[in-house]
Image 1: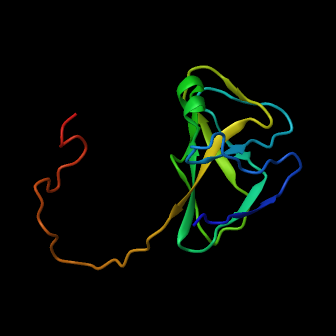
Image 2 (image 1 turned 120 degrees about the vertical axis):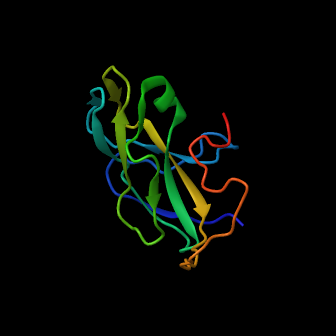
Length: 147
């Protein structure tokens, strides 16, 4: 079953989220800007999408992810890694961007700036324990399994 995500456009010029190809895993989000926005090297900005969503229920989350083309080709990526939109949030989605390149980067009004993924959620029951089961890996992390 395909989940239904209701949305509301909150600003003039806002666009509905859309899948760029039939096989896309995430829908594109576009910048709602009155004029081009130039981020200097290491500069950050919150960019409005003019979009608010309603997820089908607490069994879903929306994740805002970087667009690989912006990140790899131009150095623009999300300032918080991945944005989490909880099922009970009804405010407008904004995208925190950072320019990791050594050149200024300009984002145009209406430009695709991020991707929105809708995923199922499992809320865990956290139980405090004095010990945890042993594994071959143990506490090894950060490259402990090799390259």
